[in-house]
Image (cartoon, rainbow, N blue to C red):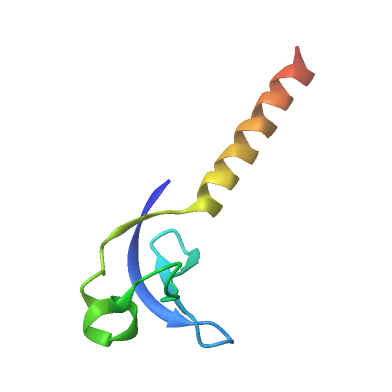
Length: 78
């Protein structure tokens, strides 16, 4: 599910993560050669990504769980 970046902070290990408008966080590591995200290393770079949409895996998982639970309740009631 697409969610917008509303801010940034660091975790306990100093890795940058985006705060999404749903309240979840997503790590945005600059870890060459696997991930090249130079923009995450500077305040200006991070500011340029505010409002950018990312897929929130946690929202997807929560939606899937809720859908399964509501389907299970319907099956139990019939």
